[in-house]
Image 1: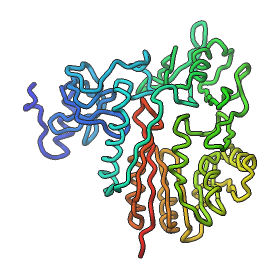
Image 2: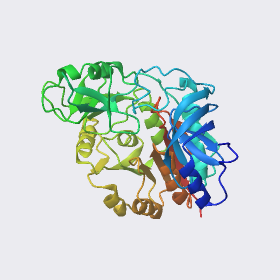
Image 3: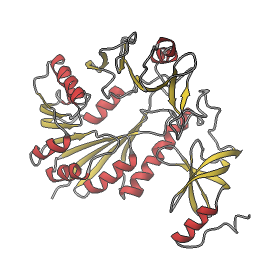
Image 4: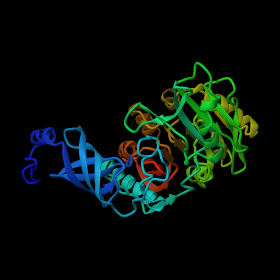
Length: 406
């Protein structure tokens, strides 16, 4: 069937009919979109394809149909786009841990930043500021933590990650994005496991090479690890979130906290205190809010170890604590989970009208949604893109906002 014969008619109903008939097709990949997929079009219909590269000419099979777009998998690379390479990891073709190993390291960040900017403009309707920076770190051997999946196997347990787009386990023999001591531990883990293995295992690496695992298993390391950044020490365990790129932790803290000083700052979703400790060096009082009980425990511990008496730890959900914030506060930092700010939290922050608001996000589409609301009263002054997740489609974005003058 020719391309012309398969062109969709106008209107959504025609698109749905067209999608139902479409199985395989040939497309060119125009760009990378937020999340790491390549995007091409067939008959005007957007088709998103994992492991694609801008400039590719592909034969693809449609695997998911939606009202206004489709998803597909690569059947054949007819023409390879610029920047394509053979993935360095032998597991990349199946493993869902990485998205972009098929692209040269030096162009991955640029493509992700372009996709994030487009998302902020398209979803948020935002005018992007003149001040923008891009920060990069080592593209390999950078991860300080990982979440593994485990299954019983013939002879020995299987250790690895889920296959891309499924819950089938891909057993691994190497993982070059992990810091070398962590990779060495993961590769040898199968031989250390006994009966009654968990389905999931979190592992974290400290500065001194110490490792910790959760849940607790006999013969595996447990307890706490320490990461030292810019002269500050952070203690945590494998159950607790901590940023994983060992080269960029200092850059992230300095970018978020910035050079601002003042009387009082609020750190919402504070975790173990990554930003709170630095804020306390620049503000007379810091209120750090963390709803996860284990993270809040380490937040208190890190505050004590740093001997910072000007940090008040609030062990409560942000949804509850934000209602107690006074109006017209000087500074609020938010570093929410991937889902972003819930509507009520976003509205409560909007109502507080902090003079300086910093938003840290790993999901550009969610950030765009939230900034669309907040920028009714704020000016977006600066954007910083940090590639905390090389070889994946994710990128961290720090947005600095100032309250508009009346």
